Length: 390
Image 1 (cartoon, one colour):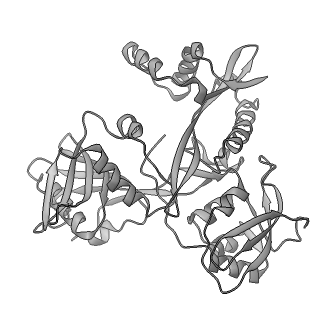
Image 2: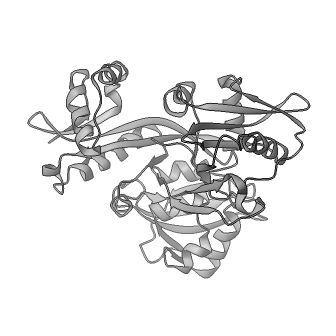
């Protein structure tokens, strides 16, 4: 068995595997375009006697965590042939990729799971949800007098990116977009946008949307304040003679739009979305900022991580008065530490998806009551979100 990055001439075998695994077909014209953009150094494969058995793409991405940018390994396109399934190829590849990400200094990894229980076995855990709304036009937010203006299809990409970054920084786990990402993965030729400008001339929000079959399909609704939200909705509501309703997808889970509607009884759905995994616990924690406290405190923590031995075992967690922390190897045996959890639980705890006491209540986090109380106090409250896909 050989694990390595693909070579340029292996583009066709990789695409053929992806087409079969994900049940799609690339046209001859699109195939040429994909080949020109193919980055073989990002694609890893498992080979037997020169034949590609399984593969995945490792994307060098960045995400917002605590209003700072963290290097993240995005895993996409995990695929194998049906005759090669349950033979350990994907498992071997995932373990190898964890080592690669650790060596690359990517302290966090994220992926969209085809099957959540499968990836939980390897330490990834659901870290965010999204809402989806379907709103008939008669239940749209009430039109208001706009204190500002809305410009349609007139914003430059830099302005959209600046607004997105200010919005994304509210959450943990949102993507830091490059200009290439905007062009290749966010915008397309059928998409419209509208930009809200305040009376002072400041951009304060935007919407990315399409008009399809008399429906507004809203891909992104980004606003920095209530004035911008109302102004953008008034613009959308002015399509009332053209549409029967609107659908909004990938809405952050803390959104309260239904409550703000005149009639909140609209169709609403809630979906578990992406999974995340701390790749290097020491690096992640030592760059994390906990809540300030009156004195330095130290507890021992046991991390269960059978697929990343550099994380697995007991640690001494020290949190300083300013919220900075250190994580140092400890000699304590399993069962003798103050706190204990899996790497997946640690990930969602620090990202803010679930609270320590909540995790302890259901047995995902165990430990001394005093240590659990301390953890509840020092871990900042946060919201998680992702409005991208890879």
